[in-house]
Image 1 (cartoon, helix red, strand yellow):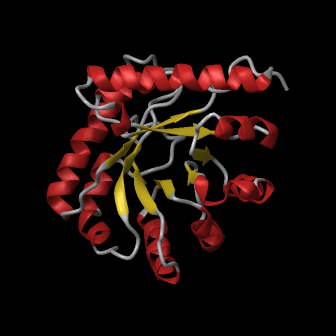
Image 2 (tube, one colour):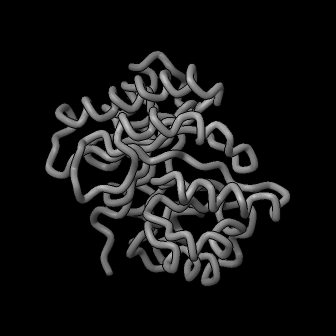
Length: 233
């Protein structure tokens, strides 16, 4: 029964993504779903992958490591994403396991990743995390800080800097979250001009606001609870 419910949830989310992308004047394939699997046991993740999910996101490095080890059968068919805070002392173990790190929240961490990247033949892409809601509890650069660090960011060329990431403030509605997404998109355009980096990815939008994020330019949406709604432990 859980596998059937997971399939239903995934198809519903994919349909909503496709509809929002078309409303934004983009093809559905322009937006990638990162299925957030935090707190989900392997027996829930397997049917999710069987139903077609290929990008899986974890919040904590240690949990990511455990999931990768518990699900070796996925191999290269699945792309793991780290979407939560990464400490510099966990960089070397995490880097080979992931396709993308969405949560590079400081120049110190970016430089640590840039230093470690040459040891890998194909290092993962990274998104720079920006605190667009100005919440003290959130990690990431402020808009002002990241612009001040733009020149230093541009010197980090060993690690592919592919885009920006943000989260809307806690308790916002889909509509009130829009401001955070607009700020990120406009900041991406400024950083492109300042650094010359392409910054093609905008990682923004979660279960309660991903359609609004897509309308404002999201290329990656991080959805968890909507995929596991109604799934029994």
